[in-house]
Amino acid sequence: MKKRITLFLFALLLGVSMSSYSQIAVQADTIYTMEGNKIVNGIVLVQGDKIEAVGSASEIEIPSGYDTHKTSVVTPGLIDAHTVVGLAGIYNQDSDQDQLETSSAIQPHLRAYDAYNAREELVDFVLNKGVTTVHTGHGPGALASGQTMIVKTPYNTVEKGVLDSETTVAFTLGSTVGRYFDKPGTRAKGVAMLRQQFIKAQEYLEKQKSGEKPNKDLKMEALADVLNGDLTAMITAHRANDIMTALRLKEEFGFDMILDGAAEAYLVLDEIKEAGVPVFIHPTMTRTYGDAKNASFTTASKLAEAGISFAFQSGFESYVPKTRIILYEAAIAAAYGLDRETALHALTKQPAQLLGISDKVGSLAKGKDADLVLFDGDPLEYTTHIKSVIVDGKVVKK
Image (cartoon, rainbow, N blue to C red; front, side, top):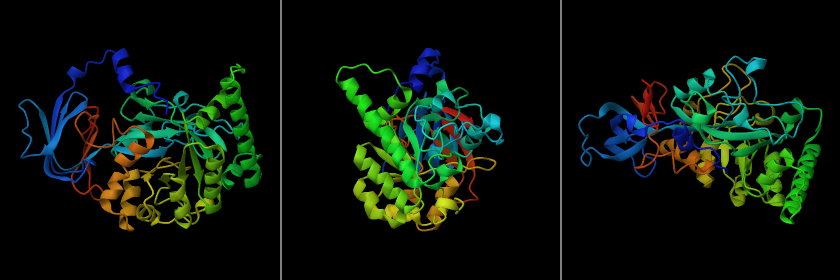
C-alpha cells in the first residue's frame, strides 16, 4: 500500500501542537484491547493523540489533572473494512453520488482521494456510531471502478484525516456490471476485458523494466501498481462461480487480493482458504437479491470456523441513508453463531491488519492512536448506547 499522505505529515504542515491536546483517563468495567484477554476493571490513559497506558485499575493510577471518563465497556475505534461514505452522499442526488463513474467499465485510475467529501453528513453519521476509520472509495458495479483510500472520520478535510491515499483498486465480477454498462454483456466478456487490460499492464511494466519510457498512462499505472503489489485488488464477487473466477485471476496474474462481498463464500470455503485470500464479508443483513440472493446470516461464523480472515463492512447501499452500520451487522452475525469477541475483533484489529494500518489503529496499546469508543453496556446489544467517541485523543462525541 502507498503511504503517500499521512495524518502525521499534515499535522506537522498545519502546525498542530500535540501538547495542546487534553490528558484523558478512561475507567471501564471491561476493556477489550484486542491485544489479548479483556481487562476487567481497567484504565486507559491518553496523552496527546496517543495511548499512554492500558491495564487494570490495580496496576494503573490515574494522575491528577486528567479528564476522567467512567463507562461500562471500552473498545478500540471501529473500522469499516469497505464502504463508500464520503463519495456517496446521504441525499441520493446526482450532486452527491461519486462512488461509480459510468462512462467506462474499466477505470482503475480514478482516485477516491479526489472525490471524498469529509463534510458529508454520512461521515458524521457513522462517526456517531463509533466508526472512527473507514476504508472508502469507488464502489462495486464496474469491472474496475477506481481506487479506495483509508481516512479517519472526525476531520473536515481529506488532507487532515487520511491514513492512506491509495489502498486498493475496486473490481466487480458478476451480473451487476451489466446493470450500468453495455459492455460487457456477459461474465465471460467481462473477464476477457479485464485479462486483456492486465496483459497490457504487464507489457507496460516490461517496457519500464527494460529502460524504455512509455508514455505515461494513468490506467496502466494503476493496474501496474496492482501487479507489482503497491495496490491490492479488491474484487467484489458474490456467486460461487464468480468467486472462483476471482481466484483464477489472482493465480494467473499473481496480485494480492481481498475478496469482497462473497455471499456464497460458504460454498467454496476450502478454495478460499487454500488461496490465502481474506474476505470483507457482505453486510450480514444485506438484501438478498441478484447475485447476493443466497447470502446467509451464518457466513461470518463459517468463515471463522474455517480459519479464514475476515472483517465487517457496510458496503454500498442504493437507498437513503446510503450506508449500513457495521456494529449492527456484527451483532446479527454474533446472534447467528459468531463468537462475540471474534465479532469485535472483526470490527477493529482484523480490518486494521488486513488494511495494513494495525501499527496505528485497531487495538488499545501503548503508543497507538488514541481512538476509543465508550459504551454503557455490551457493544453487540441493540439497547446499548455509545457514550463517547475519542479520536486522536480528542473527544469528538459526548
